[in-house]
Image (cartoon, rainbow, N blue to C red; front, side):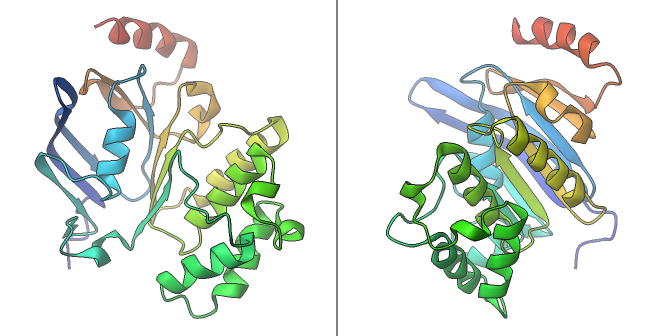
Length: 238
């Protein structure tokens, strides 16, 4: 068992390159339960690479990630069990209905009653009436909400969200902010990647800005969003 004050996530020296491009350059990150990190940065800064590394889907070429006291590695798939991921790919199978997709995900996590849990998370995304539809029958916004439901199936203690507001209208965006507010507990940590800080500013406890694969800024969320925009512009220019 890790110490009670140990971080839920401890990343050390993460490095990843694609040919001549350095996506991550020695990135360190600690996240404790209750932390909500708003992850910002220009295109190509390394945000999605960092998120995939924290999810255990991408093995860094240097460095390590510990989640809940266990090192993420291909040799220990159970180390990823505390993690829920919303990526640019929905992870939904088009040949299955929404309910079948979520029940399958629940079985992968050995949930005791995956159908009941699937119906609960679909209802929270206002999708229960569409449970028998296939993903391709849904609008872009509904597909995003279904992908969020899948990420929440096993009630993860680390929730990683890559641009979760993409494709959502104003009503769905407000619903997602309310849901994330409910999920922000003393037992869970979240990372929210976005290009627009205002989308999740009030949810965040910390803000990080990646520039060229390194932290240009990492600290507690400033009180003033407008003032932070000036800081962001300065940091993003390098």
